[in-house]
Image 1 (cartoon, rainbow, N blue to C red):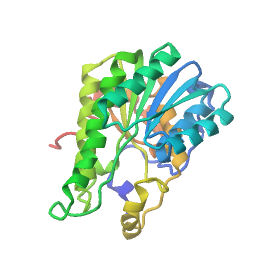
Image 2: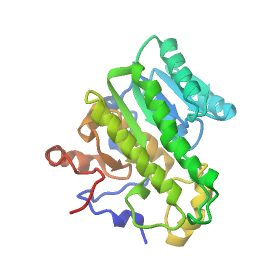
Image 3: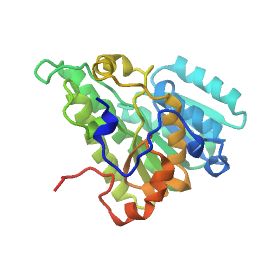
Length: 292
């Protein structure tokens, strides 16, 4: 079984590794002169996104996370990779509204400017149990981080958003796949977060808000919990650089036509661009709703 085969779209080419059209080194995708903030930026997908933005020449980059050691390691790595990038690190739990607000405000004050790109990447996967067998605190932790945390993040970001800022919500394909045993907290919280960002999109038409599924990524804090599912369904992990480079493309002018839409990092962007007019004409395409 391949989860990728469960989604029927016009996009026929699916990628598991990065490719030239989303290379952060493309001049068209340059982020030089821009300021970006990434939550969960010290490891896993967040760290890969940070690295891709460094390759695209981002000028100021804020990394928020809960572990100082990993944040500082990523900061040092990026500043060697991209000497023109200044990295700011903040040890923050996004469920703490005051700490999140303080970190975002500190970043904006330090750079004397607005934030052009916000990457909402923090998330949590509870233990994979039935609802009846779940530990309530662990189950609700998914909502605390994925919903409350992102609510706190959006409120903190809003006063410092650039006029045409882009918000990229790292979501998951699980919100639209068939039933998958044990994932009730993760899927419910991810779907709730989708609606949160959908509202932010509708309330702020001058901003671009894009939801994306980063792929099946190993070596993250979540991957250990899903290893049994990966083995059961014979799935293959995607290269984490795919999600990082796709995020850079999603923050570019080329991707503005996806405002308000949910897409997969695996989908070929040239094929997406080929149906740009169709997407513009159908306000429900690549969104979540009732099938009739």
